[in-house]
Each structure stands twice: as C-alpha cells, then as structure tokens.
Length: 478
Image (cartoon, rainbow, N blue to C red; front, side, top):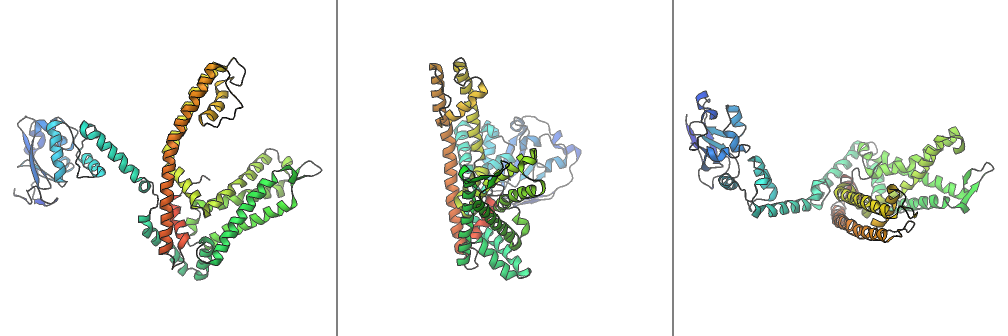
C-alpha cells in the first residue's frame, strides 16, 4: 500500500492529505492490536502528527480517540475519523490542529483547558467532536468558560429567538419587495398596491396619515363607548327589567363596528399574500375585535334576549366582555406596545417563569406561617388558601389592607413577606426591563433604517411593521 501525506508541518492547512487505502484484513483489525501500554497509534490532525499510547487513550474510553481502540471493522473506523492507514497505524482528522494540542494535554493530564483563540461556541463544537465533556475543564478555566458562554448567549438572545435586528433588515426588505411584486400579477395591481400602502403605511402619503388618525380615533371612541355604557346613568331599562343601550351609544357602537369590519375586510382583500394575513398577530386582533359583536347580534336576532337564553346568555355576556380586546388594536400604531408583547412572549419567558415561581413559593411559605399565627384571631386567616390572597398582595407590596395580622408573630411574618417580595420581584423585573429597552431601541433603529431605504418605493413604516411580524409571531394569545 502506498501512502502520501501533504502538509506534515504544524502550519499545514486542514484537509491537505490524500492517501490510497487497501481493504483491511482481519489480522489488521484494531481490535487485534491489543491494549499493551507500549502500543501507540499515530494521529494526524490537519497535518499535525502526534503519537499516543493505548494506555492514555484507554483511560477515556468514551472519547472519540478512546473509541478507536474498540473498533473492529472498517466502517466503525470511518465513523470516527476521516481516513486511516492500517499499516502505519495512523488516523487522519480534518479538524483544527491548534486545538488538538489541548486535546493531547487532556489525555496526558486528564484536565482540559480553554483555548483562548477560539470563541466559546467554536470551543464547544470542538470538544463535542472529540467527545470530551465540559466536566473535565480544569478549575482555572471552568468559571471563565461558563461565564463567557452565558455572556455570549446574552448578547445573542435576539438572534436565537428569531428577533429582527438592524443587520437583517436588507433581507427583510427584500422579502417585502417580493410580496409587493405579487401585485404585478394581480388584476388592478397598481391600484390595489397604492390602496394597501395607504391603509398600512402612515408615512406613505397624506391620505395614509389621515386614515391612520381616523383608525386610532375610532378605536378610542369604541373603548370610551364601552366604558360609558357600564355607568348606570347612561343605561335604560325596559318594562321587563332588561338593560338597554343608550341610543347615542348604540349608534356609536354600530359605527365603530362598521369601521372595524371595513378595515379588516379591506386589508384582507388588498393584501399581497392572503395566507400571511391570517398569520399576523395584529390582523388576528382585528378579527377578534369584531367577532363578539356579530356573534351576540346573531344570537339576539335568532333566539331573543339574554333572559330567554339561559346558559347561552352567559356565553353571550362573555363575548360582549371580549370587546375589551379592541384596546389591543392600538398595538398596530405603537412600537412600544408591540415591543412589550414580543419581549414578554419571545425573550423573557424564562424570567417571567422565574418570577411566578418565586412568588408561588413565597406566597405558599408566608401564607402557612400567617395561618399558624393568626388562625385563632378570627381576622380572615381561617385557612391556608384564604391566606394566599393576603400573601399575594403582600409580596407584590400592594397591601390592600382588607386582611391584616394582629399578633406579633403574624406581623413579623408579614414584614418578612414584604421584604422578600421586594427582592423576589425586583430582580426579574430589572432583567425584563433591560431586555425591553434593548429590544425597543433596536426596533426603532430598524424602523428608521427600513423607512430610509424604502422611502422611494413607498415602504417606510409598513416595511418595519411587516418585518416586526416575524419577531412578534404568536405574541398575542387568541
């Protein structure tokens, strides 16, 4: 068998070795080499050649080189290395030769050290390839390695969570341009494109700014109408005792619903991609804001008043209550609201989970202590579940004062509950606020960059709206 290797020096490029290999005979199987301490094998990593004893490799049988000793076929060898020479007992690996020096040191000492030249994730990939666990990191490098790993994950939280950034805005603009090109294949495409940009992009033209202003005004009027309707002085009662809408409020409600219906239907008809329309959270909010009205209207027309509906009447009341979701329509016009939703759902779910866990543990502990101290005083601490309300308002430092301890032990427990709540709530809230601020700044920068780059095409604000759709996907739960 002839063997040729290129680049045997330490500075050789990876992958610069070629050889011809003859079929491996049973007599030459590695399993027949034995495990005598004097047995050695040759390792060639990117041109860097080193010799290792079988005894050193056998100490770590779960690593890639350690598993070579147990190989008994050609296929099993090629699963662990890139090439091999049986007669020379040399195995070839197309990997980083600089890092392999750290691997050699690991087999000699049993301790792994961090290679400063590699980023932390490249280092993770290398030790994973060689089958070396992070557990073997020496104490001098372990803390620094894990600290850098957490720091890198913190800096890349938006990329890992598919959050849009300024660096990706050219690709996002390209996707939006691709959607806009769909209008060229549609009937009345140019007209539909201008109308769609007028509805979606407040910076497109003066009519688009006027449309955005009217849309926000109608949302505010709808919310105000719903709130005023709950006031007794604006309610009317018929001869059967049923509450009726005040005529002016009733007409305003119909006008707002008509406008919302016009908005959502127009956006659907003018959208360049109807399939994407139903995946956008802001469009789902628009649909949910009008569905309760039509459902209750259908029930009232076909089945009568709430008193005649029985249990179905309660369902109708729930649907009427869902009108409060109209306030979320303001998120279409507010970067801050969209950023808050995306931050809580996509980027801070761990912190929110930790916050809820801390509160649950604290409420359970202090409620039990307060129950033990106050159960005989008849002040509202009758059961531990009854104390949960007191524990919740105390840990969140709200303190309604409807239930208060009267004994010394109960007051001490309340003091500990309040102090613990300050620490428990403050720490996760700080992290959430920092992430929200970071996300909000990047989103504003992205909107400015997209607006400047797409001004001539009339993209502007809507480009950032659509690109933000990828970041806020599934933010609102409907």
